[in-house]
Image 1: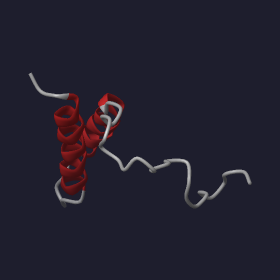
Image 2: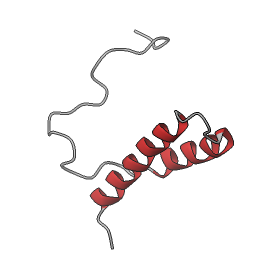
Image 3: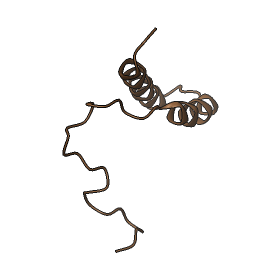
Length: 68
């Protein structure tokens, strides 16, 4: 059985491979439209220790359209 960390890393790798496939000239856009959100939805919470202890996902630049 794989660990939570292995599952997280494997899902991120599959999302990366899907992004590379999407850039291919003969990519199947219907497959990308279905597989992308499905993979993203299955992405588990990052396992403890995956990010540095002082990592704050909410710190950083605001995205366009976000409030003050």
